[in-house]
Each structure stands twice: as C-alpha cells, then as structure tokens.
Image (cartoon, rainbow, N blue to C red; front, top):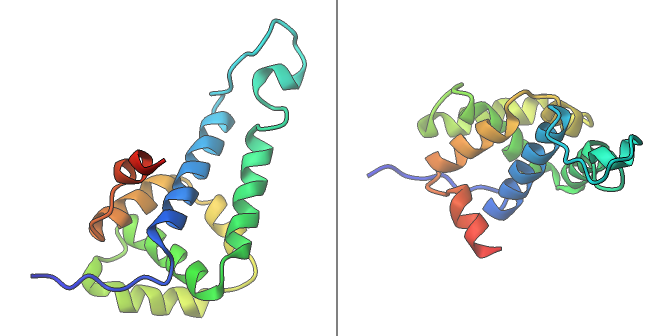
Length: 136
C-alpha cells in the first residue's frame, strides 16, 4: 500500500486552477463564442469574461495563495509532467521550495499544458476533476 503525502493546498484550489487554466487556454486557441453578428472584440468572447480576465483572475488567485500552497502547485505541475512520482514528492517539493520566487503565477500560467499536468498529478493523489465538477 502506497502512502499518499499530505498537500498544503486543498484539492479544490488545484481544481480551480485547472478549470481557469483550461478556460483561458481554450479562449486563447480561438474557442471563444460569437455572441452576435458585430465584429467588435466583445462579440468574440474577449469582453468582460474573456481570456485576459481569466488569466488575470488566475494570476491573482495564485498570488493570493500562501507560500506553501504555491510550492505545492509548482511541485504538482512537475509531478504531473513526469519529473517524478509520488515516492519523489518530498524531493520535488524541496526543489520547488528552492526555486520559489515572486513570479510563481507567471511561471505557472506560462506553462503549456498546465491543466493537464495538474490533473495528472491530482490523479496520483487519488483525486479526479470529475469528482470536483460533480460538487459544483
């Protein structure tokens, strides 16, 4: 039986980051919805709740996390991209703590496939995004 390490960040916060990251990535890739026949930016999902708003909200959310939560989020990203497995958690987290700085939000938001990496890492912790969605 494997031992699952404790996280400083709640699964709900990680899944919020996953959700916001997916939404902003989708809109950046042209997944905006045309709301009317106008050709201004607001009609293509770039208005009040578009990519810029989602990224800004995500950046603010990450910046508002305490240091331990930010470190966990970075370590989870690395875990999800395959830089180790659960048995390496302490080492990954230690490396993330050593690398921690004031640009954590920018680093994470700029990481391609962030949502996929975090979702994979949470699966290793026995948590699924689908379970989170069902609670909403």
